[in-house]
Image 1 (cartoon, rainbow, N blue to C red):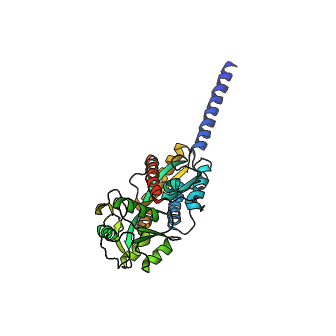
Image 2: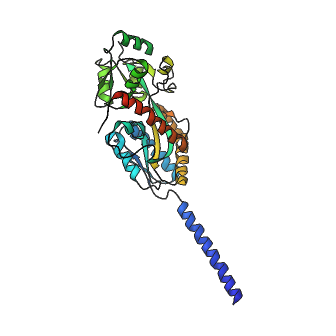
Image 3: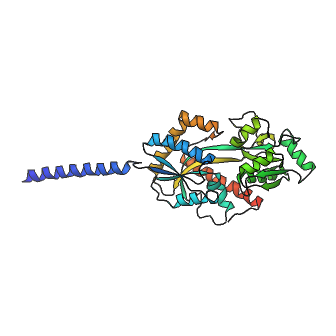
Length: 328
């Protein structure tokens, strides 16, 4: 009886160990169902297009479907709030941009999340440089000539934007602040109308993303004065930066980062980070993103994105205050 009891105890211990290992293995398996990839903007735009490229590559990397889920509205706030409130299990993540992950924190009066504390950063994907373009007949060839022209006739020159509080508006505010210029802001309802009036010569200039401006620069329909980021654009390296033309510290771009709800387990954050990194290294994604003018992230760690978001929130808070714009 004693030997039998010992044998039964050993068998029971082995079964318990096996069951424990199986349960742990099941718990650690991630993902085991589709992941919802929230885009806080409408379908068809550049952010949506990049998200779909990434979703296809991520589906291959993870062996589970990554489904783009557009939740647009309030400059990206509706989608961001949705993700901030989602269950923190790694199955709801967001492809965010400078708006919902930085600018909106200072721009909107009633924002229900904080990009610095409401999310678990996953990866900084990259950024799309803004560029200063002017109408072809404006008698300037570079940034310093533009500044001189403005100071010779203060308040006469203007710049178009896609709307109050948009990055194209705040880029002009930052330019005025650093250069001491008096460029007058003319807001439009979207990038398209603003660009159309620039092409028609109705406005003097705009600060827009390089993807939008590139075909018009190449055909001579607009004149590029400077890339608005600290480094030159890989897509158009012949164009100098605004900063190297005398406006030290001038840096305006649209950045793209992936985040999850706060509290998402770190092991799942790491799995997603590694899968996104592999996706970004794939030839198909690199080729597609390069064609859109996207610059690669200098650091893909979650910690870097967390630090970058905090820096961007602080930077844009100052610019938004200078603009005097707030939105409901």
